[in-house]
Image 1 (tube, rainbow, N blue to C red):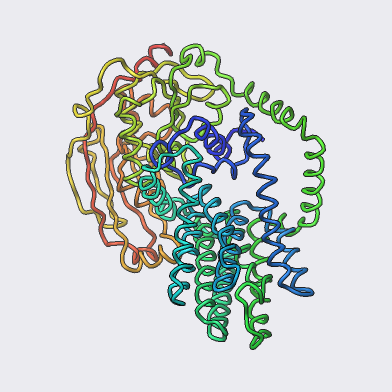
Image 2 (cartoon, rainbow, N blue to C red):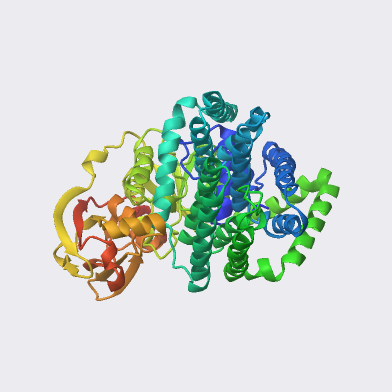
Length: 612
């Protein structure tokens, strides 16, 4: 259903980008690919996308059910019952995890058919990996890994023809789907590099504090699963195949461990679901030998119990109301199928309600059909108003969290493709200072655009006529300093100047290891203004490297309009890079700080003229 908010916004935006034929990797940089809107499943008025999503729901369900049944038939008795019960009650409740489970089953099936008379039928499973990979970059990473270990397995067996078949099938399928989605094949390298930057930055920036209850359960589960994998490989009759399958399964669990426990909220259930797969699919998944099978069960049974308890820690209703939710889902699906001819009308009615609530008539009168960009993560309101949305590459501002990603948006707003109008709403996440998101773009807007009016919590800015000379207002180096962690730096001598800051805090070797296995610890920026008021904000290290507006302190929309009008409210007297004592070992002892001066702007003066 169409709704406002962060998640619904990117889901609807992905559909809008697909309809407009925007190029992923160039025009759009995100963790999802050209068909990502099929996973989003959020309606915003397009009949084409509505029918596409319905078709995929039917086709995807058929494919996934067939794959599940293929593996289920290899199990017997209670094992088969638990396998099917897992998918019916849990596996289908979280789309991201479901895709990971399907990739794992498809990848293991490719390995299972290796050397068999029907090895060419592996193409169907390779194509499924490519199809799921075109939807989300994380899917592509796992699918590619399974294909690579399958190729390595074939080469180990000296079956070069089969290895070449896998290479051609996977690359050919992915390229064909890429082209069918209207994407330029020349953008693939850029897509891979930028998507990798988003994925790598995610673990450094998007982490939140992990609750202890699911964490210790997950760590024990990891130990039990690793022990099981090692035992299975050691006792395998076909060790090469067992190693390849174990590596693929291990990669799936690792990716979902990272995804779940970096963003340690409801995402954690994805890890527990994937960790349950080897439990419910024993002994078929890795083709376990009968020897030591009982020992493997005794390893995996406590893992299963801990997984279920971990799911309950993350999202209690998923366990407590599992049967009720399963029943409700069945009746909902039956109801929707019975109302299929009028189903779109139901969605249209909900969309109309949202459009009325988000309506911006004054803004519509001014912008007309001209291009409109947006700063923040509220693309839903822009789409509800049917403005001519022209996105920056990293279209949700909180995701421009590495120097590379921030530069993409900066270059866009410096180019001729910059939209004629910008809707601006400062809203960040995870305790960040709002101007840490797309900070260079916010600075450019203050000079290249002028304030028009405010409506529904947004500020509308209009691009000035004529060329824009960024060199004249670009940040100019003022001072560099090595600042020890948790030690203050007094900068009150610069309090009357507009300041930009870059903070380069490198991880130690131990910090790199922690980031690879888990996630980096939190870093904070503490500010003291000239009035003695203290503020503390999360500052992930890539955001510090990219840089942001430091002085004056811009903590909300009113502070931004003052900044853009050359008015200073809160001025910084002292800064401190804070890391808890127990986490200091994960970082270098000092941070490299660079201060630069900014040119005050008058682009926001009209706001105060209108107020007066």
